[in-house]
Length: 138
Image (tube, helix red, strand yellow):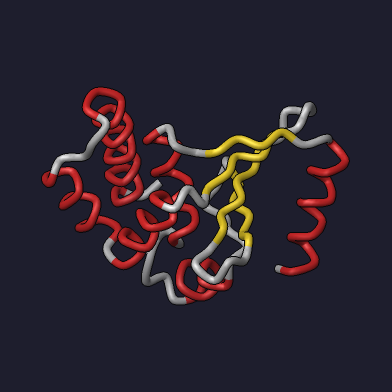
């Protein structure tokens, strides 16, 4: 994990603490987040504000997140990594490396820290289909 990743994770923990205590984020914390994440931050907060992040769980214990992007398309993010099924993940995160996270993964992290993530329970079969559909579109 890089130093920047560690700083980012510490900031997400501070978001969680601030939201638990005050239900708001200070200008100082927002400035620090903006310094570290820059471009995707405002877009990620927009997704959080619109309540576009859903945690999808199944009885087998698997969990993924679905984020309804600004275009209305659903993208899948895994809870154990920074993977997202969006094109920006491949282009900006993996190839160009000009950002460390896409806006969808950042929105997942922020919505979980702020406790505003929607919940959806599906069957194991539905989870399998969801994961398989991401393999065919990635």
